[in-house]
Image 1 (cartoon, each protein chain N blue to C red):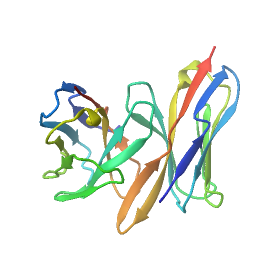
Image 2: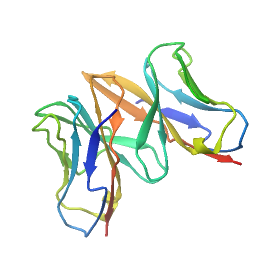
Image 3: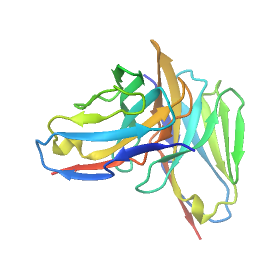
Length: 112
Length: 113
């Protein structure tokens, strides 16, 4: 059973605010990922990490940043939110490279 | 650049009928994943296909992989309403030490009583 958590689940925030989306997993997985998904659309990888102090950008360009100071924690930060950032953000983790990815419940972000 | 195409994108079918969802991809890969997503929810892993000829079945769903044809299928047998959801295939691609998943656009399945 996968244990991966995201907070908040829903967030409505004004333009220009700084926000941090939290993602934690209790499985001890080294590999973690952030995806962005617009309603009814496919997922796009925006960031990934293969371990502590390792972060990379994904295929989809994003103005967000991530950090990986602890194995279990992979927060995503938007320094200045804009309406174009409105989307669902899904966090995932896997045990190893090429292993099945387990997804968190997602954060639905609306920027007004 | 890896491209993943699913078809159909929308599927409305009656309970009890059979149907197949197709997932084509453009470059070599040995791993393919199928996920299910209910409205407003996250993704649930259905199948992991790791080699050419792999076939996996769970209940009314069966997935297969043909790496030579770069094709995976998700077959639905005797559909029931509970199978209504969006189904995504995702293909792994690797390079320069990274392994990433590229997702298809998803097939939105509606099973009608």
